[in-house]
Length: 186
Image (cartoon, rainbow, N blue to C red; front, side, top):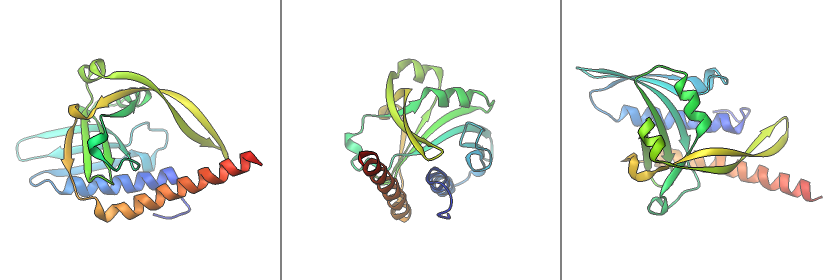
C-alpha cells in the first residue's frame, strides 16, 4: 500500500488482503477472487468470488467492509448495510450476495447471506455518513438495513497481523477530521 493512494483505497486494499488471508484458511476450497473495487471505481461492488470444492462450485457478489472502531464485539448487536449497496449487488448474477464485515480489534469476521428474507426482517434506519469530494467534506443521510449479528455467520480469525495497519489508517482519518474541524472554526 502506498500513502499516495486515498484513504478509502488504502482501507480497501487492506480489507482485500484480510479477506484473501481468511479465504486461504479454508482447506479443500480453491478460490478465485476478482477485487472490483481496485480496478473499477464505478463497478458498485467490492468483490466477485468463485469457490470450488471437489463436488461443487459457487459464485458470490460481495460487499466488504471493516469496522475498525468496535473493540468489544459483545456490545455489538447489529451492523449497518447501505440500501444502495444491495441495489449494486443485484446488478450481478452470481449465486449468492454476501455482506462481510471485518472487526480487526475483535478478531472477528461476520458474513451475512443477503437475501430477500434477511432484508425483510432487518430494521431500516438512516445513518449520517461522511464523504469528501474535491477537498470538501460533506455529510449525507443514507438509508441502511441494520443486520443483526445473530443473523451472520461469525468467524473467530486472528487479525493481529493487520491491526497496526488498520489503526494507522484510522489515525489518519482522525487527524484529517481534526484538521478540518479546526479550519472550519477559524
